[in-house]
Amino acid sequence: MKRVCTSILLLCFLCMMGNGCVQAPPPQNTPANSDAWWLPTNPAQTRLSCSNRNLTALDVSGYTNLTYLSCYFNRLTGLDVSANTKLTELWCFGNRLTNALDLSFNTGLTHVDATNNSLTEIIVWDTNNLPATFLYDAGVTIREP
Image 1 (cartoon, one colour):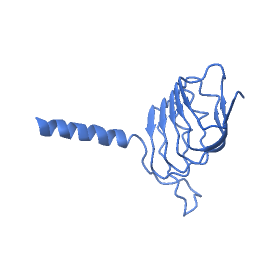
Image 2 (cartoon, one colour; image 1 turned 45 degrees about the vertical axis):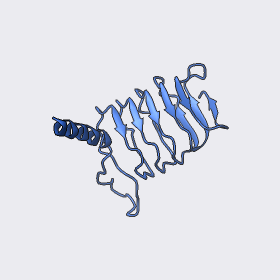
Image 3 (cartoon, one colour; image 1 turned 180 degrees about the horizontal axis):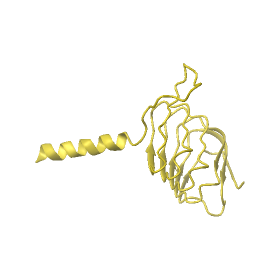
Image 4 (tube, helix red, strand yellow; image 1 turned 30 degrees about the horizontal axis):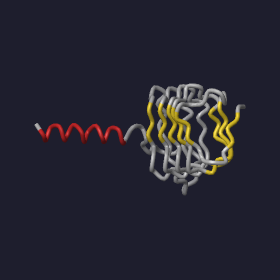
């Protein structure tokens, strides 16, 4: 019985770890030295975990049903989640995000962690209605569009 339970737990862990972040062939005209990961688009997918993978680019525009995006501890300099209007959780800490993070289309967000980046501002839909968990670095301006 113990061996079966251990096997089931291991299988569950492996499924969680590989939740959608697989390297697919890059689009045409991608530079040969590009270390970006290209994800096969699955519009029905609701969770995507691509954390701690040394990513430099991440295109989630085709994942229109995402409610959870975890892309922390990468080397992302930008992140566009404007097409992910169903997003409720965004974990993008520990990247190299610069300038602005636009969350103005993500009105259902309840948890955001954008700490340990180089952001100057985060744009939200309503400064009076922020996510319940909303973490960002000191000096970051929070504003509406």
